[in-house]
Amino acid sequence: MEYVSVFDILKIGIGPSSSHTLGPWRAAQKFVGDLIRSSQLQHIQDLKVNLFGSLALTGKGHGTDIAIILGLNFQNPEKIQYYEVKEIAKRIISEKKLRLGNTKEIAFDIQTNIIFNKGKELDYHPNGVSFTAYDAPNSVLVSSTYFSIGGGFVHQEGVPSNIQNHKGKVPYPISNAMDLLSFCSNRSISQVVYQNELELSNSLMIETKLLNIWDVMKESIFLGTHLEGELPGGLKVKKRAPGIRQKLSGIDFESADHLIDYLSKNTFSFDHMLKWIGCFAIAVNEHNADYGRIVTAPTNGSAGVIPAVILYLICFEREKVNIKDILNFLLVAAEIGSLFKKGSTISAAMGGCQAEIGVSSAMAAGALTECLGGTAEQCLMAAEIAMEHHLGLTCDPIGGLVQIPCIERNSMGAIKSIMASKLALESDPKLAKVTLDTVIKTMWSTAQDMDMKYKETSLGGLAVNIPVSFTEC
Image (cartoon, rainbow, N blue to C red; front, side, top):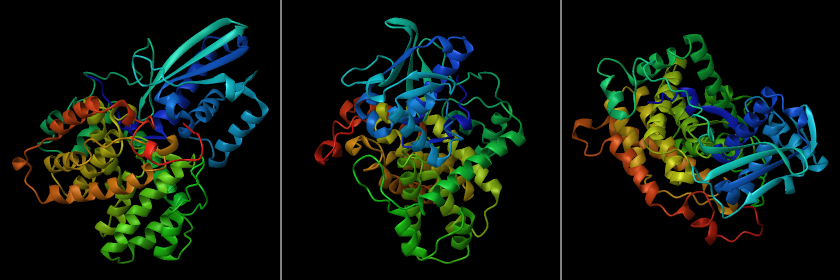
């Protein structure tokens, strides 16, 4: 049994896509890192990158090529500055030179060195990328293939999973929701998860990393509500969150904390609360679409749901929320996300958007329920309700961009998660006909039945019914 850590599910990265941007970025970093460790880097004269499956079909719109050159350049998605993402990529593209590992310079033309093999798919997963390094013309030095399996997770062909196997090492081994409940007779879900994380780290490190995650979430909301402009990619989508924020408050806030303080100290109508929740979610995903830093939760395309629901909790639901509540929210959300990863998928290329917005909504619903005093049974009931009403949701990004309908879907997912929590808190889980394990199983069977064109390929749905004046995917 694999133990999926909180920090496997909640990762800091650059948008717009966890599977098409962050995953390939990490794969490129790993490829170069292996070259450095094997002392092969200095022998490389040329490099070819081949993209397969969904990466080839919608990689342009998701910035896969940009992510790869930044990863090969050894930029860190957790540290690189917002303005540097486009600046460094633009320089590499214009100069047609790449510094592998930021040390070894080679000629590299993004138009010819990165090949989009549309119509070709590798066996293991729809998101495949291979790197082939040459030490002389037609002389292969090393070649490696990776699969971006969703949520920023990367699997290298022929190498054991990058998720460590902690079987027997954590006090509460969990493979499904029933296992989780069996450990919650006298403790909360967050307490169970925290005890498991203590086997991998110490309390200071866990809390520091969770606080860092929360800081990135806050910053993405703040920047998303204040940075105006047009999203990249060709659809000419204008950012809406700054305008919504201005209409609702008339204030240019100095920081995320200033925004939260303002919202917490004022009373709002139901209509205004709905608008603010939508604004939060849209802000994060507009920032994500603009190559901003966000928290993969569990994916980049669904990154806005959890921050929006946490702000709902802080600003509109409770008179006082302390930092422990926020940490517990993240612990519970991550554990629910891990249940979907183990029992189904968090990859839109495997399961459609039910695997992204559906899972994030379930994560937020369960976490909110614990923070509002719900039992473990009610938390899982909330997660089940949220996912139940996302089953079958397709992934059909127009132009291959994580913009339409992806950005608005985050606001829908946030509202659904809040409603699911409210229903669960007013219900007796013993009377429920559907369990979380059942809905996870159903989600996976639905994913298998779903036509490939509805799985992040832009070959079906809105993507083929809305004409675009450019070719991006």
